[in-house]
Image (tube, rainbow, N blue to C red):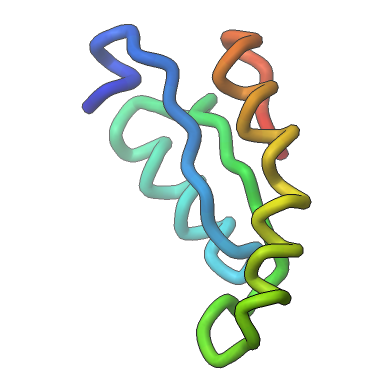
Length: 73
């Protein structure tokens, strides 16, 4: 896994899957793995809404990749 090799990593997903993402990260010894979450769903929505959701998470991704140990939320 990249994070275990020292490569900054952030998981991007929807809030619906946050508990699962945190559980899986913890099970792999990565309890502090940053998550950048957008509101669920992504499927079945218009492209402009996907773009808005992506734009809303860019700051969290940048923060997670540039400030080690700081969760993206």
